Image 1 (cartoon, rainbow, N blue to C red):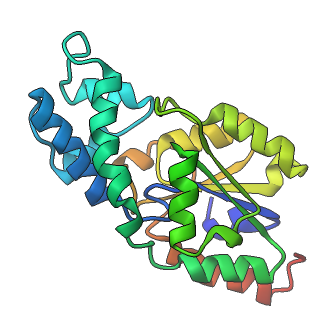
Image 2 (cartoon, one colour):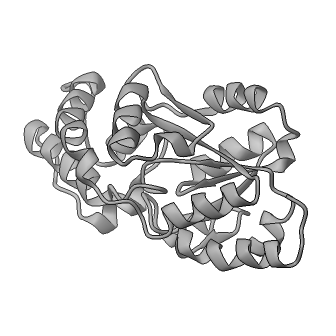
Length: 228
């Protein structure tokens, strides 16, 4: 199904954060490699990172060769977040973010963020990017396990008070697609994030090269007079 047909009739956009709105891949790879150096695992390339990344995050680290019997997962996460959280606000936003949010708002389409990041870091980074006021709801996690965000998605759906099919979840991982399916949202994936195109093509969701690709699609729907 095309992105155009997937956007038709949408009343709310829910965005994943890491890799979808903010371009933090290189920082994530660097943070993982700090863990590799600390705990004796082989360093990873950007390509391997995007090929292996997934949820739950603990399984991703296991695939990279981390031994939780020797080094508890919580210790690995602590080292990762020490570096990642200190630098994430310096990462740039992906092309098209501001324009897409403006266009959606002009058409009466709401926007929210749903992330597996810790809530306090998420809010702080959104504020640093001057985007906090662009979202109706900002939902992160209250722990560092990064096990997923299905429960948070279900809670967000209740707060939206819209038919689930009227919401489009835009993300960059197969987990985002699965969360959308479980909640009843539509899903659309972008290939600029934490999983590569080959992984994303395993899903049944449309995959776009970037958020900028959605701008002419949404503009065309508006020009065609689709009710907002």
